[in-house]
Length: 164
Image (cartoon, rainbow, N blue to C red; front, side):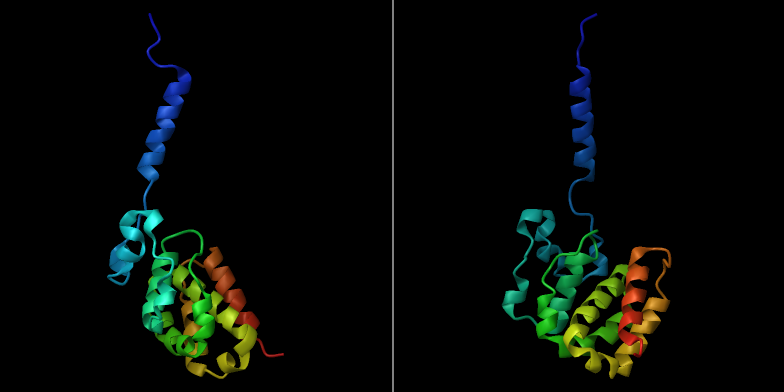
């Protein structure tokens, strides 16, 4: 009986099917700002709007953009430098976001941003009781206490708030 498919051809075809099934962005857009789909290039990774920060957005808009780029994925991308420049606005916005997070990763991302801001503005963060209280509550209420978002967020919180 003649061979129709070589083992190598079957393996390549199987791999291609697996890759095609897993390709593309899988984002629950209902959790995000209505512009998230556009920011993510309408499913085309080559069309992601990496330069949104150059449009001089309001802090609320940039925050939503940043979370849209970061929550759905396993890695962090996007320009956190915007938050360093607009740190006062961010620490005013953060408590409301911490009190109603979409995901544990959102708390993790906010913790990282607070950590970066604390490098130059730790006393301002420590004096903002609304921020500290919301942050503590958000970390305590994270769903998965066994995951790295919790471990890192908890560690950052303790490092920043620990009194010398």
